[in-house]
Amino acid sequence: MSRYTTRTLLTILMYAGVGLFLLPYFTGKASTAPLLMLLGGIISVVCGLLRCYLTEDK
Image (cartoon, rainbow, N blue to C red; front, side, top):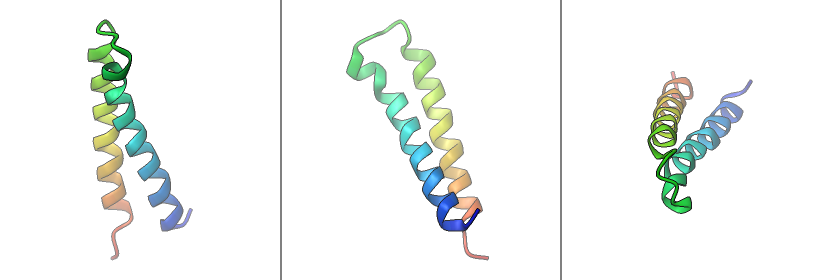
């Protein structure tokens, strides 16, 4: 997989994690909020760090 494809895929996953993090605010469901916020935050941070690490110029 090329760097461009990897960077694009990780960017999409990073923003999907942010969307998952914000989903409880838009739906108003407090019962699933902690789980979705935790999962979305983990996905965003991991994909963001991988995006920086794997696509940097060496």
